[in-house]
Image (tube, rainbow, N blue to C red; front, side, top):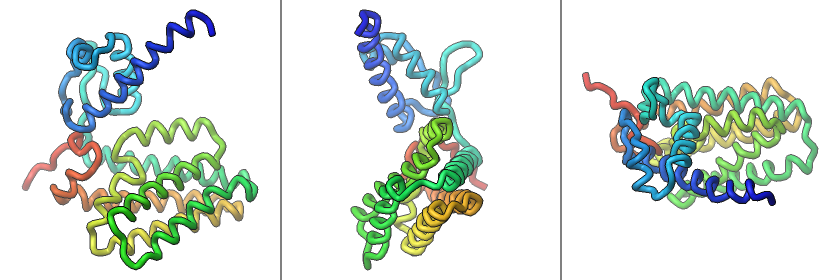
Amino acid sequence: MTAAAADDKPRNAQTVKALLKLREMVLSGELPPGERVAELSIVDRLGVSRTPIRMALVRLEEEGLVDCLATGGFVVREFSDQDIADSIELRGTMEGMAARRAAERRPDRGELAEIRDCVGNLDALIRQRELSMEDFSDYIRLNDRFHTLLVELAASAVLKRSIERILHLPFASPNAFVFVQSELPESREILSIAQEHHRSILEAIEHGEGGRAEALAREHSRIAQRNLQIALSNQQQRNRIPGASLIRQRERA
């Protein structure tokens, strides 16, 4: 390792530390929407130098959580209902591309083994008579795994990076509204529909049906759109959304 590389390691570690903490501060509402991020005060609070703070803020701008001001500095973003809906639709579009690309590649049985196991585990979970909160936590883990494996099957570094960037927006995640969904009377029906989508997407990929795989993946994202509308119409549900403090409050009629 060169001396320059050795010198970069502590700086990189400080940048990661600053990024994780700043992201947490934004999502928790500690840094509220519209607030200008004062770099010097962040330096004092986190105990890292100004350069890693600046690099972390640039990364948060790329993720869409802060905006760079024309006069210099950064401000925490606020999101409208439409911003969130657009983020979910964009994820669905990108995952649709990934599903089509995966089907066109015609992956072999070995490449499909993990996603088949994931779908099988989801099937077993959904078949249970009663679903506890622990079961919903397991669903979140497996659902996240399915979406990750789907993107990996596309074997496209460009698609993977693009989708990862979208997922940094907390409410664009496939799991952003699952706990909201868990409290609905029709929660099992919604999960069953989502799982049917998972099975159908996998089947389309196995059969090399790119157009069908893409259409199914895009349709799948509309479940999140439905849950979004439910969550935004109820303050208690709204507060359960990751990053809820960033969402602009609806004006009362």
